[in-house]
Length: 391
Image 1 (spheres, one colour):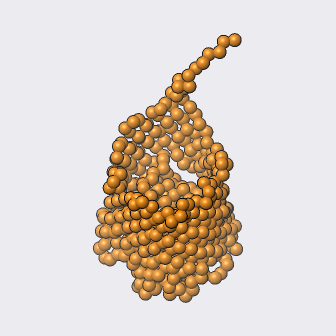
Image 2: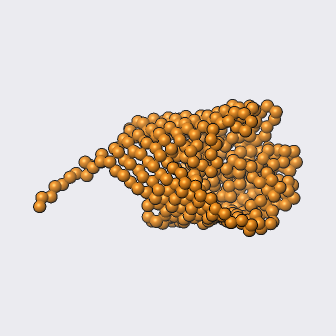
């Protein structure tokens, strides 16, 4: 018998086919979701999301990915038991990577910075992918396409962008959105800038966006900003203070309500996802503790108000929240802008090689806006338990 040694380096260019499976199970419970007493509005959801993918590595330069997704929701209320099911190609792309260029063509996730404007919405059961092209070279990124998979998929919308990142001055992005709209076309440009710097134990970050163009026959003139300061008050504990605001309102010629585009808003403005970066003001206090490498604990307090009291209250998904009498909007502005306060507790426990457990609970105490509009304003409670694994 003759033994022949083959150096491992010779296998680097041999094509490889890698299979992976990602499974996520989550239970959610919404108590009093419309701020009114009848228990018939309470709802429970059992979400299941399974992703099965194949990654083909043809060479160090070329790879391809095909990922199938099946997502289902079994839900029940006092008056209804039902379910939904969705199967789709979640990803399907070809990727080229060299020392000075990365290019991706096909169905893919797109993510911009902290994902306040563009993101894959990983919290939602379907997530979000785009049929798009993407290229990165040095400090520049460029991309463009349309939504392929999402909870709400506008058939005619497309979004294009170009980004420049600088280590000192931050990241600047110009994003163009086109859609048919409900009355006429939507053609908006959003100019966004994000910067973050550390000063010892203190981290300061800021993001601002201005928006212009046309929206359903009106001139689009809107803005939004985020500021945050965080400090390691203890070796494993970080305290953060945040302020967020986005314009709202309109008149006969101009729409001033900021378009939040296609973000990953979950947990940015409260665990209950009742507020998005759209016609809002927020002040938040957040505490995060990494007790061990595998355990993360969070506690948050949020105070919300409407930027324009005559414009609707928008959720994290960008749609208008509803109450017992319908959409939460008072065109007269007479109900004021005090939306309320939210208090959140959550925990994530990572397990070696077997996935992660997470749990959270949120209490939303409505302000005067809901009480004036509908005559009642009971506490909303949201809670969840989740397990996710990948192998």
